[in-house]
Amino acid sequence: MNNITIKTPEDIELMRESGRLLAQTFKALDDFIQPGQTTMEINDFVEDYIVKTLESRPASKGQYNYQYVLNSSLNEVVCHGVPSVGKKIKNGDILNIDITLEKNGFIADSSKMYTIGDINPAAKKLVDVTYQAMWKGIQQVKAGAATGDIGHAIQKHAEQFGFSVVREYCGHGIGREMHEEPQILHYGRPHTGVILKEGMTFTIEPMINAGKYDIKILNDGW
Image (cartoon, rainbow, N blue to C red; front, side):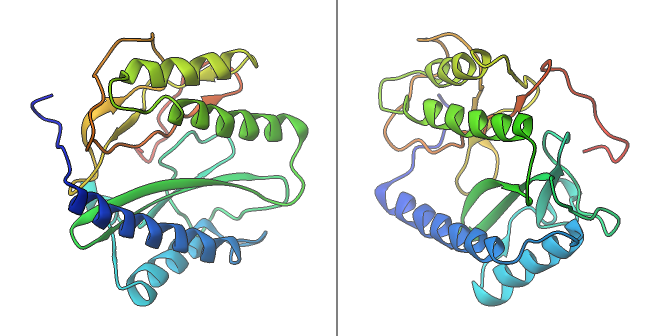
């Protein structure tokens, strides 16, 4: 617990403002995304919107030497997909857009899964179950609960549909830094891990596979 930052009510209100601005970004993106666009066009739209319209900072750009303002993970890419002029979205794709935004010193982090046109039933089931699993995890959050309660709820829901939870990536604390303590695993056992306290802020962002939970890193290193 020594490395976990407990936020004040004033801190949390500033984080809520960052979150509201990020939600506004996704609302603008809802009307922008369409088949035929490249993921780089989406990146450029989001950067322009955050900087010029919201007068905020895209927190991902420059973090860990990353050059872009978002991750665009297309179809089988689990997370950290890199925008590219060579990647066009088309009917039937599923596309996760992950964006961070900083305003007044505090960072918000969120992602949204976009279904492009008519997607096949298997893809729709994966998207729906992952969304449900996220909410199963969120419902465990209260002072006195444990991080393992969150992971267990997510894992239980995903696995009952024959899906698996990716092990290599997890949720995380967030605040003035993009990645803070604690780590929020999306699998685990109840009543294990860190005990939640009022004032803690963290992300819950399960990554669910239709097959095994194993992944591999692409040549771009992300």
